Image 1 (tube, rainbow, N blue to C red):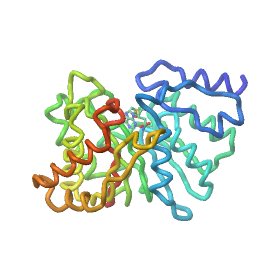
Image 2: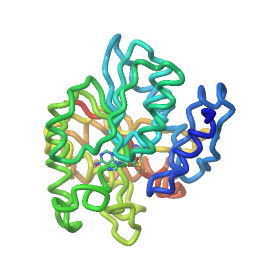
Image 3: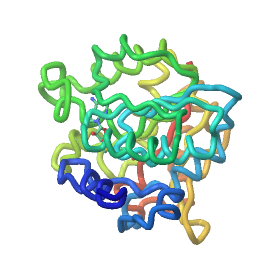
Length: 278
Ligand SMILES: C[S@@+](CC[C@H](N)C(=O)[O-])C[C@H]1O[C@@H](n2cnc3c(N)ncnc32)[C@H](O)[C@@H]1O
């Protein structure tokens, strides 16, 4: 079978998280294979652009992508950073095979695919890396995985605290994003979808309690035409770190979110991106 047909079949497997990510640009250009993803309400391009602007990989550094899906971030970064090692953790066998197929075809020897779940117990067994990307997985705990540890939303907070506490032993820097509907179910919000300030404070507090230092918080804005993630001013990030529940912090955050006009964003583009360090 030609590459295009193999990839098409693996990509369109009709699982819960299929047809989620874009096809990496280098694959589109070389193989005449693409998939139509409408990035107006959810997308990778702006996130990828943010990672590229924000993180400078040191020579030989290792990066893990937990919940790598079809590998848009792992593969795009690996293609451009051949002297770095990438590990993609992805439990869906078709998604994992999609990543491996592309890595093989394009001789990306710096990509390793691990077809497995990284639930709370498994964290202890993954290898330590320099940096991690951990986007939009954790709110599925209790629904997609670790059902016995999170039997209801009431256990979610404690679970996420334990999870990110353990993760601290596995990397020095984490890029993090999550959804705020438990298991992706709009009728079951962890934080209400319009409450961007509360999303920010909720995640920040958990990370600080778990011993992480918050370095950056970025919000998606259409201030430029294409839309991009913009960092919150470092004074306000420091304010959050110093006294998270101070009313001046809440007021400044609200003002910033209003200035970015974020409440017009889709649910996905309301989710902040956090960069935290152990
Ligand atoms: C909502 S998608 C997010 C994909 C990607 N990280 C992104 O933000 O573009 C969640 C991904 O996490 C994977 N996943 C689900 N449970 C997981 C687990 N226990 N460990 C690692 N990945 C998991 C799913 O198969 C899916 O590919």
